[in-house]
Amino acid sequence: MEKRCRFSLAALPEDDHTSRRACHAGPASLRATVYAVANDQTEAADHFVERDGLRFAGTHLIIDLWNASHLDNVDIVEGALRAAVIAAGATLLKLDLHRFSPSGGITSVAVLAESHVTIHTWPERSYAAVDVFMCGNANPHKTINVLRSTFRPKMLTVSEHRRGVVP
Image (cartoon, rainbow, N blue to C red):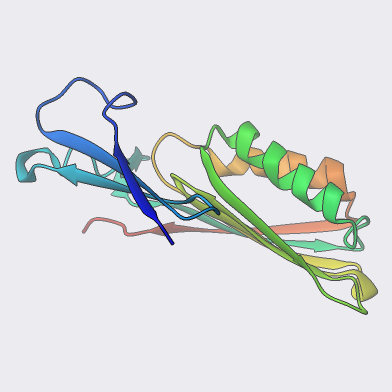
């Protein structure tokens, strides 16, 4: 398999302290993006959140959907994840879905520049477990309305945890 590497600075701010490298290997075009940030720039580039007088890595939401619909439909689950990422103002890097048989349950992960969104569905129980973790300027709470309108749960619960609170 031939390996090709391409180096590009086009998407980065004009700054001598940061470089970006994108590598593509093989026909599947697997991508890895590597950021090299000078030590004096790392604090500014950590994307920690400052809210309510706290500084922390990001907000982690655990969302349970009960008596929900469309939990066995890959197209609807994929559309909901894409819409949730857009609503949150996050950057989608990769989306992977898997449908189990015979139950029709779906597991999916949306890998984000700001972290991730995952969903695991149990259509036979009308239940879905959703995990949303985002740092930076993304707003994970905006995913909730997308999930509610797509899956129409009779009950939706959310627990929030602020990850990496700076002491």
